[in-house]
Length: 143
Ligand SMILES: [Zn+2]
Image 1: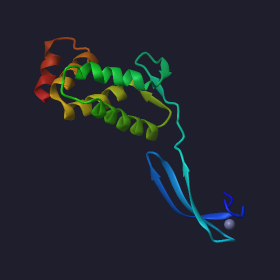
Image 2: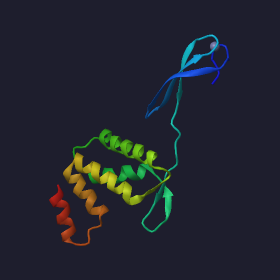
Image 3: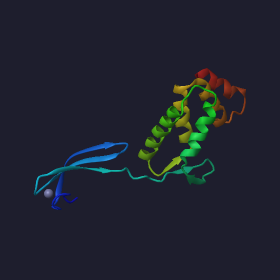
Image 4: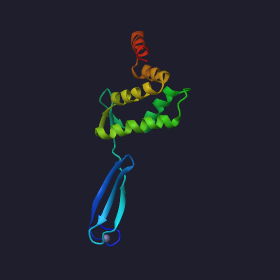
């Protein structure tokens, strides 16, 4: 990158990564002035691979709806739900371009488990698609 003051070449003196992006301290090789640049993380498109092998674009809204349904009438703020989604998205971004839908379901489930037992059981009952009462009892036993 060129110096913003004199357009000569610069070097990076410090680099920090955060979820908001990459922050770089730069120093001009000629005039020695310093400045900081920010680079937003590239929004990678993530594809969800469904059980039957079909693929669809990852949708934040869908994840949110699923979580909200499970958390209905529970004392859980939208902020908490958004935090869970952010965590999941960070994980997904580090994994690559394709993620199995089951994987996301598990991530959602694990987080709900820590957050609220009722919401967890509700989510698990839909997600696991309980075949019989035994499955249900197993989940109940876990919490
Ligand atoms: Zn310069």
